[in-house]
Image 1 (cartoon, rainbow, N blue to C red):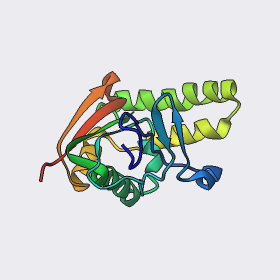
Image 2 (cartoon, rainbow, N blue to C red):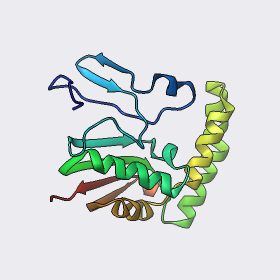
Image 3 (cartoon, rainbow, N blue to C red):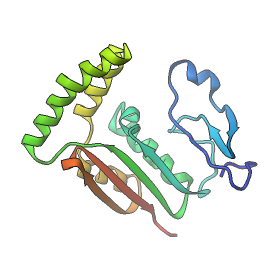
Length: 173
């Protein structure tokens, strides 16, 4: 929990973008949950203060570079208590070349145009398509988590490897 937050509060830190930076540090309570907008590279929590950090389908958005991703993953580790878990659900690169080619073709030629037509945002789905194609494979991400200092890193591939759940544990001191 965030210092000063209700004992049952939860937080939802996320990397903000554009005009959202103007609200950096903004807090609100919704249904007993404390929502905190913060840059994932500099979380407003004390070291060793959280039991769990999760992120779903957003890790691709903090990967302007490998160094930036390592910084953010390291920041997640910093705020976790020893024995705390980081759980990441994200698209991945299938190990099978055929599945990978089919998945990327589906994203580019089916998902991207259909979603753009429905939402009216071509740029958002062009971005989605490029981040999916350029993101790390599951074993590469395991290595990044280890480089950031996590131990007991495990991965479960889903849907023929097009997505993966990673679990990493902050080692006990």
